[in-house]
Length: 167
Image (cartoon, rainbow, N blue to C red; front, side, top):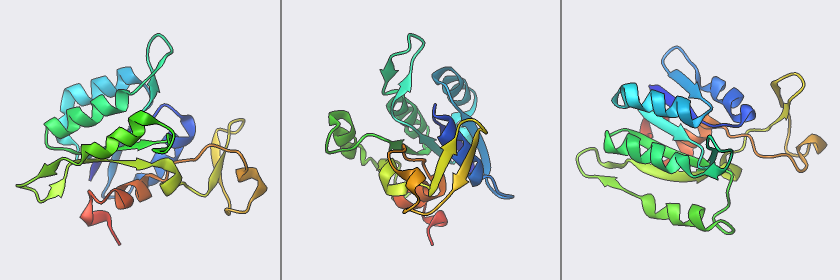
């Protein structure tokens, strides 16, 4: 598979590196500008677009750019997952993303969905000083109060959009 991962959090970009295999080619971008460029030159060349929902714009304000990235992918027949740290119980936009269940009659699978990061969290903490992930167990005290790190392999599986990655 050829996968584009879009996320501004360094911890999630590092975890996206774990997707790279001999058969899976992964492009990782961490800004709206880089995502716009990647999607404008070859969106149809990707098999999957995995994107964060909220990213900072040029003015520093958080915006739901991932929604636009996902819709751009879908408009080109590419399956997309919006993976967000937001919780559908407390974030109205996140709860509205459940309406994105667009079906493709020709391909017999949905083209876009959302996954909450807490459902696909990697058992790791981010060490910013060393710029690396440290794997651990759920009961590790370092996990307390830390933001979720997205496990992009689980995002593929959990989304239900990629039957070839299930199992």
